[in-house]
Length: 255
Image (cartoon, rainbow, N blue to C red):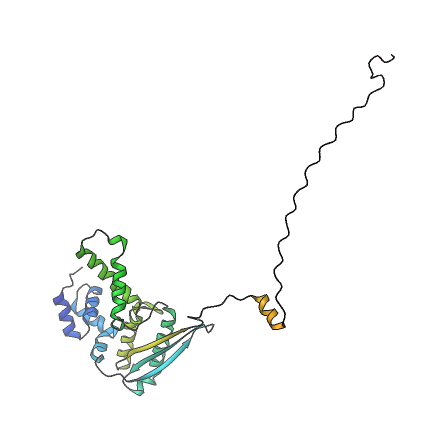
């Protein structure tokens, strides 16, 4: 496999306008072949998506999805550039798919890594630095391991980095970029909120008998005390066998 150098990544980026990480992934997927990598980026819609990324997306829709059983629901805002695209069925389908993805990804709290507060990042770093398996390792090695773990953890919290539920070979971010290429406009997932039935409510332990008694204006019966365990009667002494004298059993009896 060809080495993916920074120079090669830069050449592909200049050729396609795609982001650095997308270029690196394309080169990795195509064994460092520049032309095949550029074609791969175009097929994924990534190259055109990067070119439109700087354009203002202030239109779009707010949509909802309520999961079966009505115990989980999602509101999500997805933006595009024009009202024309916002009314497009393909755009509406994309928004519904994103809402379903949010319901399925219970660990997700943010749209992208850049949205995660610095305090959260520092907390995660402190947790990783304190892991037992890192004790005794040199600081430089420890820092490198922790950095890799932090990047993985932060991606787990972000919607755009999740594998798409309908096609695990692409991420939600790649799904959005494919739709940008198809619809010809910049598309941005702006925000979302998830509602889980009963979340945050402390449930009280209820006494059903007391509730019924209160409604009837009576007092709930106290639970009956357990019956005392009867002691087993002492065993009676076995009666001594009665010794009967047989006829002629006396000494000196008549024969």
